[in-house]
Length: 304
Image (cartoon, rainbow, N blue to C red; front, side, top):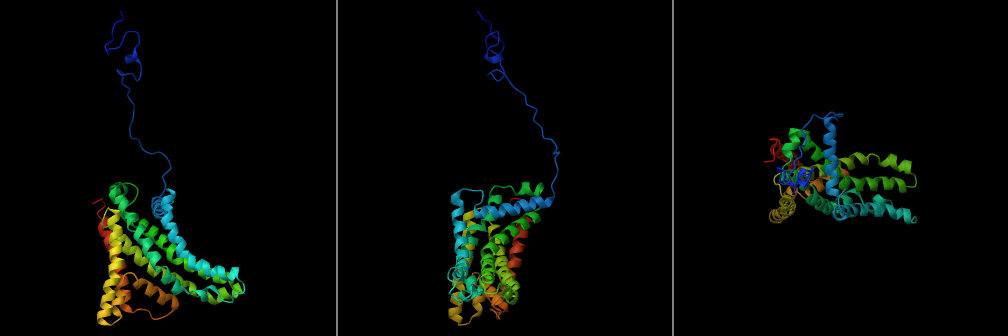
């Protein structure tokens, strides 16, 4: 009769005596050790945050379903510019240039709804995930400071909105040059429009970046961030419209967060006087206020 070992298994090497058996234990030497590889500069961490901030709203490196909505909005934003550029190319008999079919102010106005839809579904939620997952303290204690985190997020938002706002106008500009009878002469005559195009796009892009990110920084829930932005850009026009109807004056329209930046941008690109100083004051208050909100929310360096 076999004798039992101290572990309860049979003598002679039963399951209790084998490594990994029910009666055995294995010690692993697991310790934290200092990283000995090559260290990359801090700007690499900021660049990684910028790249991630751009990829996520566009659905890149995600499922096909996540790409449908952002790329649908991109297609709608670029469709007018691509269509008017394609007309002279496909129908040479048409004597009109693309900018004669649709101007830069009309392109800005046409894409206003697309811009609001893209900002509402993308920008506020750029900040909610990290706050929801409570990883900000980890970021700020290791790779980046709160200033670098905010700067990276703002840069990503600026790039995303520039794709929506500036991209179609550049397609229209260079498409007009390519379809002209004398492209070199056309470019020399219209190159002065480029600074106004960039400045007009910057007015819209900076405004909605500040507004969208400021609202997104106030909550950790994506639905609240999206709802807050929509409340501002939808309720604002209703209130300013009521004031305009009651007072019979145009100055309340300068308070509209939806059309105000577009009106400023169209004035810049068309070279007109614009909606006035009040609209610029509202623009400056939103941009500076948005920066102040971001600094107040992330300056404490925690997930609170």
